[in-house]
Length: 415
Image (cartoon, one colour):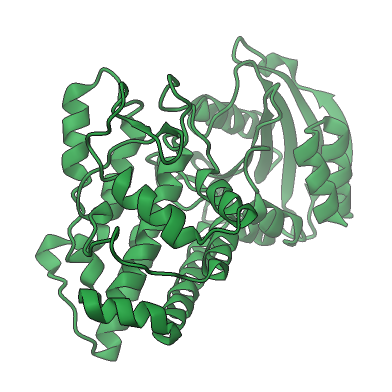
């Protein structure tokens, strides 16, 4: 029931829908509808205490709603919103934690849990933590729906669990590991692939690892709006679901996604510096602008134009169904202010855990600790946070090209 109500909140972020959701989540929710006009300013207004939950453990949680005067993004206004939430908790003195919802006129909203750290038996109003879901109609919001819609609100501890970054990290790792195992299994039984792999000296394990790495990396790039940019458009105007939509196009035309689409995207678009068009970034294959990323990640290790590798489309359907559950972000964060999303740090942990499994199993690896290659990809992605556009940034552009030279040794680490 509460999950369906949360879906309605995503469709229409109104105070009425929020109240209905919180009533369904907790029988202890008491509606108040108290205006908090003293917190309104030029950035945020319509502050309203929708209600509170008084738990049996003598802990109290307030629910506050507010409007952002500017359109929200994952990056915009985060500090100002955090400061407002902390101030409301400090001023009230009655609440151990609060859920703060900031929305804009486009229906985007930030759904945050903010609480003060306990010092002994007392609340601390000097050390706060915030955990946030950024919700948009552009996203699938599946993690938000699952964790918040299906999670328990029976105590502050249970609510913290619904906002747990660690739980999402573990879930993503297990899902990623399963995808790798399934992909490796499919490839190992695909006689057409094995024949081509034998002729082109392709290692099946490395191929699977690199393919998954390429796809997950592009989930970060598409989040920046850099894929599928219309001709003449700016770099942040691309399709933020480009990869999934490309797959749907392949299926609708009865095409093989890997052979007819992905290889061209990887090796004739993302790794092609000179295209025979007025705009060097314009790809005739995909009728849109696609950045040249350079480096080992999208460097072909076989003659892809002469090799006929046919992979079942179901493989990619399964991959996208998993990745589409998650929100991918590239912004840097503080340990005390975390977005519930797959970020570079989480990706680094996923790769690190995979390596730890390698070591326990005694499998061979080309990894050298001094190179710290496990975190290399995530650090590259991290650099995207400060790089807003390819236009008019020649030094940054060159530096980004250098950073995208992902070490091939990283993708040859044995899983």
